Amino acid sequence: MAADVDWVVPLPDGLDAAGAATVPLNAQSASRVLAVADLTAPTTVLVIGASGGVGGFVAQLAVAAGHRVVAVATSGDEDWVAGLGVAEVVSRDADLATVGPVPVVLDVVPVGAPAHPAVADGGTLLTTRPTEPIDPARGVRQELVLVVPDRDLLRRRVADVAAGALRTRVAAVLPLAEAAEAHRLAETHGVRGKVILAP
Image: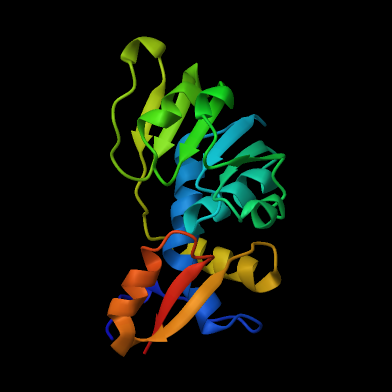
């Protein structure tokens, strides 16, 4: 397998390859989301998708930055998400209109329009895929955030996971020959953690 040297960093002691494989896309995406959010002072942040790879890292990084995090968790994942240090865990089945309004909504699933009532007028709504536009009259900053590879950032995030400062989860490790099964698993609701393909 060929890879640009800027895409890889050494594997630290104490972190296995499967755990490390959850970091590049997920943790760098999470870091990018928070960078674009540009939160200059502690505030309340709603993280939609905190059970997932990106959302779990977003929640942890926001807590570490001093923000009050309200996290939306998949049913059965509430305890794991609560263990990320968030202030409050909300069921994925909850009406998000009853959760807000909060100044910042980070919708990393994304759920789209159901997230709109949760963000305060004049607030910020960030998503990881294109979603429906919010009413411009509400003055909400709405942006799509995509990952930007950053080797120094990747090195820091891998080190954070290796040191236990950030938590991640691996649901299954499958050989490359079972890629179709890995895709099937990844698309199944209720999978706890990432499905990793091993060479």
